[in-house]
Length: 464
Image 1 (tube, rainbow, N blue to C red):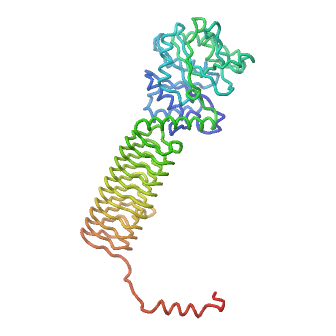
Image 2: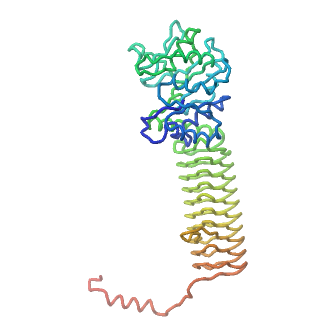
Image 3: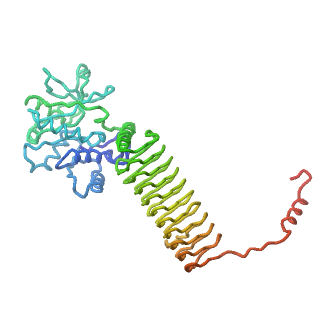
């Protein structure tokens, strides 16, 4: 169920598309349902349904998730009624699991447990219950002679019923045949004037009572506002970090390590320093070291690479044994082959540095191909943009680019060629040649001494 307005989020984004650990809330629930073995998934959408469908298609494949539309918000029971046509061809003994789309911490194992409990229940229904850590406006589970007979919504509960500790977590499993019949009996004779899905429990009570499975509040907690979102984010990231540490990853400070849900794999003996963020579809091979403050998004990193402090990388491919940083910036389209060095304040964009190439200081390499074992001197830049178009710089293997060189694209520096420090290179440099493009140096003997004498005569008595 993902049709709610989410008004308390105070956002133009549908609530179920707000993200926890880089993954939309609804995608967490869909992923868990798939992992639990769901044969068919139907998302019940309402508010800005077209945006939610686009997001589902992008992540899971076009039309991989069935869609039902709840155009009018008339309660949870009405939402499930809207989804019945999507399962019209399913047999009555099929088990339907009903989940809320804003509870990202629900585990796939819990969903599978819920389905099994329904399979074994004489009443053909099971649900999750929880005991909140503080009073909350949840429906209360009412039992008679130990049998669960109904759920009373908080707004309809008596003072005595509000003292019941067991509350409804909002997740159900029910045989489809029962669901079809019982949904027809729902009435909106309650404080909110809505069709409550919880009324199905009273029908299950007549069949012997639904099975209630207790679940931790942290697992079933939904999100109503930004405070809830931040709390769930913390819990999700702790779960993610714990799982990776158990797989052989060292985290100096897990509390300040931010790993998105889609990140992986991360190899064994990876070392992660404080304040590191791994985002998107990043993957990290064995033995990689990622130091303080680095932010890595949609990047593949090969084994035994050393990422030094405050390195930023996005949509890049990093080879084995690369040395990066500190303060390197790999923008989209960067490819660094094995044994490349990219050092202090070096920025790359759509640049391919081949095996053993080095750019250790203060350079910008954009739209560039840098050959194997080339050396890029400090202060070198590729001038790849003329205000209209982008152009490529090619530096062939073994070339040596002197410090403070300006390479005006399109230009090719030949194999084993040199460019002199301070040169502006606008023409191709042949293999093995030296390119020099700078004014001839002139030394004027005694000029500095004469200049100081003139300046001293201009000074006032007070020395100013």
